Image (cartoon, rainbow over all chains, first blue to last red):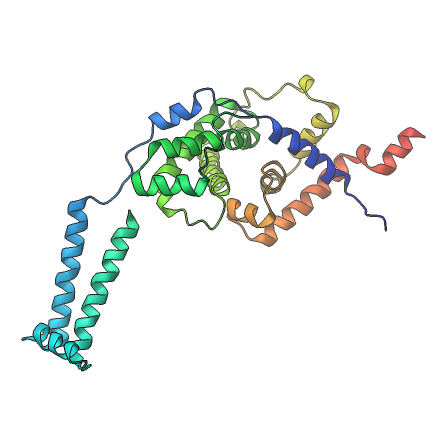
Length: 110
Length: 192
């Protein structure tokens, strides 16, 4: 079976291969780029602590409202210790999940 | 062999070092590896303007350094660089158009190889490509000269895959008309 070849395709491939085979000497280009690299924007430790602290506070307020305030932390700890899944225990676990998610997110940003 | 090639670190390893440690040496190694292909691609786009293409290449690497955290490995690192470079080049074209109004006053190809340095085929190919629209030429440059798949070209150019395929087909059709002398039957005619 004859394969019909496109001569334009062949011409382009040949010219492109010649073009790619031509290596452009670095000639100080990499050094110039390296010297002009700015400081990469990343969160400072203070900012990370503030985000983590803020998230904790928010999570605590959320749980306090959700669980009706009071001794929810102690109640939740007791419920979890006795494997009793009350509304308070679920809210407490939700708070822990939020903290873990924020921590992973901050770690991933690095 | 070009200098500065593999020291046992893949591009992914180097990117990881940049992300984890802000390692400038690792990034410099990435620049060293990809500078030739990127600068060659930009020289093609800018019509051979070395100064402008090197400026855009430098801008591309600086943007890559700033945004490397956004690199999601959805494409090869080199393809991601081509995408940034293409966007930088498009911004440059828009900026020049706004400044000069006249689209013909786009960056002058200061150091395009003179016609006398080209073989007959290369000269004819260059002329044939000059007759293409920007979109068609971009598709040809990405798929042939940067050796990208249609999918990768679509990613670089930020257009649908079908549009890339259409542009390639149209471009080849136009070029076929201009390069009729290279068609097999034409050669036979010349030989006869």
